[in-house]
Image 1 (cartoon, rainbow, N blue to C red):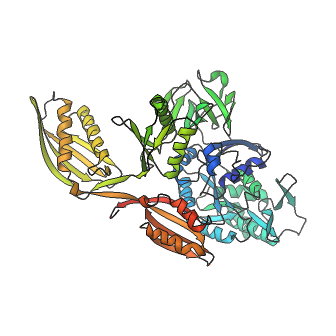
Image 2 (cartoon, helix red, strand yellow):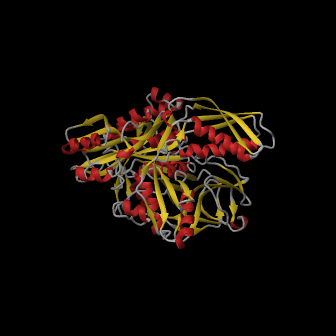
Image 3 (cartoon, rainbow, N blue to C red):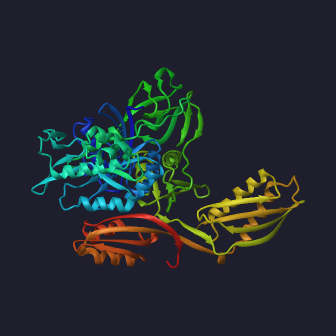
Length: 637
């Protein structure tokens, strides 16, 4: 597997991640010309919603060869609403490229992406983007990386300017200048003796200095004032790349295609190879996709080498090229494919060589907190079955969705992470599945929380000849979003029945505002006969819950969002005033007189339509991002 690399690419929204992906494919000659996100022509953004919004929604897969190495390149979403896409994509990669915009520095979602990468133990490379604008500071961005990520950046490519324009890049490792050929691809130019720019010598010496901290042979040569060759430096940089204390960085412009070649060469040299996998397994499903023409397919990572005649019956494997599926006749261990099978597959399914499900390798439970809920109904009785199937398909492809079907009303409640995810969900229902549906206005998903624990409350129930007595109590758990049910004095089967009934009550809450959370609910039964009916056990417990938990002992929690906004100074007052109008609180303010930025925390219920408001207030010049901060007691409406 030394000739195979699986690379994910992450970034904050608008940092240039998909643009960089396009230039990588262009440099590798995988595409004839790179598409631009702004024009809706990005190769890897194939969904209609991606082209319309100019954002990545589903992780796209591209394959290419560079320096005799096969790359699987995974372009992940940058928007916070699609975090599940990122997490599942990272499960199939060993290395990653994190794009940092020099215009904005390390933003909230950039920091979040870095933490994700570290939690997945992925070897990470940084591409500092948008340096075609000479006003953006490379040095400030490097300082921001060091301060925010707690690592030393090792810069391996340096932009060069002429008359205020980015015209070339100095590649530190090869000691060459990268310029464009007639096709717009980067090509190296060697320097004549004694013509190397001083800044190139400076960063080469700095790379050697960093390398000496992890490589004794380099250190010995440095101490003896001996020259370090590029080949020697390559071996030492591999140790730096795998270190937790350093990160290899490349500075340039994705849009202008500068420094892309330096990044790709380093990925071929320093990106991690796939780890040894269990060859007795076929592989595992790390994403599910739905294509309008092809139906459902799974993104699949192979665990073994296998030829087509050994594929399980009914299984078809493909390479993905945008939304095109190209059949393959063999699988390679560690490689990534699209799979179409007769099975109903789930995220994380590990399959045997014969195609049977062995276990689930991914656990998304509790990772995502849906903050919005929306009522959805089918407008045509004839469409009901089709709509129900379409909803089930989309929910299965994204574990951050949650759906409740209200049988008595004949509609659904859709729980989503945010407004963008909801809008995409509804648009795909109508555009791709042709479902005639109507959605209500999104509402915030509140939570309910006990103010004080409930001490032992005794409840009795008599149904015919059977009676039951239970002592009921509730303790508060440290984990706010979790609930547990424990039963004493009854068998395991009845305990399970009680747990299901009580968790259903808890889901509906006490005040009707949201789910009651953070509770350990304990039921202690007294002298319960072995043949007691399930209905008696359920009733005595449900009644105990309803009688013991009083509304005055419950408070409502609401989601609070952290917002980072940046705008021209002339709009700063109006934009911060809008935050106060939305019951928000400004946490910090920064600026240089030209650009104003701030962090704020605002209740989510006050942020509906915020994107439109920001565009209107700033005449389209402001940018913002938000992330979920915490649940907090709702003091007023």
